[in-house]
Length: 366
Image 1 (cartoon, rainbow, N blue to C red):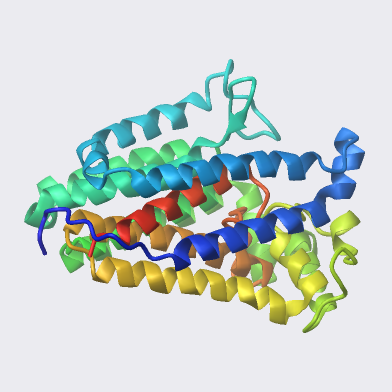
Image 2 (image 1 turned 45 degrees about the vertical axis):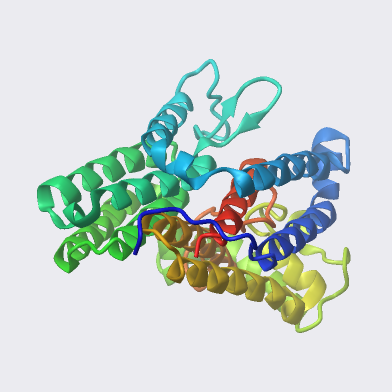
């Protein structure tokens, strides 16, 4: 595979079409699921919708910017993305600009706007690791020059994110980085060692925090299962109430008092209740299509950097969708990972639209 960047004229137009459709649909469902909460909390039924709409405009702007940015520039500045990520993740613990909200440090507040660095880290780190693995080449197989520095960097990043705490985002970043490490042709024993170390670390982190252990026991049906699994049970009730075709747009009742975080992490359950599981499944198909196109683009890439970039972006978005929907269906424990493009959350929406703009840009590189 050549290391040069050779552009072709046409892009994969289906990626922006699916991204636009999912994000606009998300705006509509946020409007449906957050009006009562907005009126009760802020005296404005459109509070959450307007904020998400502003983020959508910013995200679309970032999409078109990254659609045109030279990929050589990203490769040359790969180390800068790492340093920027570390600085932003550390700033959430600075009292002046990193407010503690609901007992967690996840935001940077600049007065006129507030954002979550961990969401941007998902994209920044994909760019960094793609560039780092591509630059290493065969040295990625060397335990000292490949495995050791990768383990040190990923450990530092995970300590910063888990300290917020945000285990769901940490999980997404770790799995994405491991898959990129594997695609970069790391030795199988190195990959296996990292997977084992990651699983052991995950177990320790879960047992170190009572609320995480409570979620796990609630999912498994042990301990105070009823109380611990309230969120997932309400999600299943909402999904079951919708049946195949739903109770009608705007007619769902779970979003008013029963289902926690109905416009953020639980929005898929609201969609399934109001539109039915058949139509809600179109969202799943949309993400599966994006994944298929992303991996096909990676397969046809003309450089190792471009290939790893496409794999990382695709894996990250698909993994977030799987974790969110899997939690709503009670297939896995709830993690707090939003549904990309659909859930309320400006940082997530902007970062995801930017990532898809970059993936569309990469679709020229074949």
